[in-house]
Length: 290
Image (tube, rainbow, N blue to C red; front, side, top):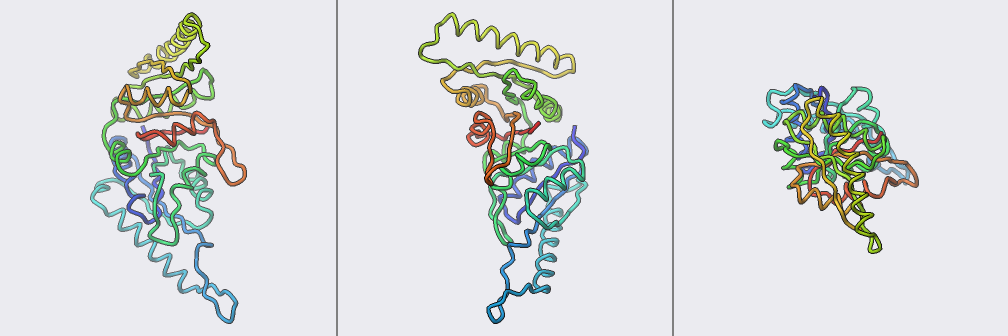
């Protein structure tokens, strides 16, 4: 289960769509929700006097007061009724500040929509989600506005967990188990089987048997912990397509996967399969960077 949930907010209604999902998890787990807004100082429009920019301290104070009032108003929304909430306004580079705060409060999960339009100086939820994937080891529960966010607010029945045979990928299993435990959801352990035009039927059958053996070994281990497990093998010309097709065919309510993020040239570089699934999945995605 979860004890501490962090919900970043940028002042937008879109960002607030994460609240329903956070509230559901908090009620089921008895968790505390931390509502956090990060004010980026460089986003202030300076006042210019005789061609020299001047920081107006009064204006800065009013901005801080406005942002704290916003957080208090969000905390008072009916969706969070009866849930212990903590509001925090921080300053600094947004993604780095959120990552540090998640570590400081020992957050179990960061819950956020992936696009927002700011009611303050600028929007940041889309870019921040990407940056957090390479900065934090705290699991992220990412959802798109609209249908994806609405799904995350409903009980989960089936969670697709892509694995590639590596211990690296298997590090998503524990967070996925915790998420499944909230609703008694079923985990579907999945792996892609890439079929090329020159692949023989014999080779495909052998590969599928090897994959199923591996998935069954993981499933047997998890079932001893009381988790309900299915296994599935997806076939396509690309791993991401195979897994996304499986997600649709099996009517998964969410996908849980591990990815490796590396900072470089101000953009996110991760495994191509994970990247494609995160960007293309119509359902919420639980992402873990080991």
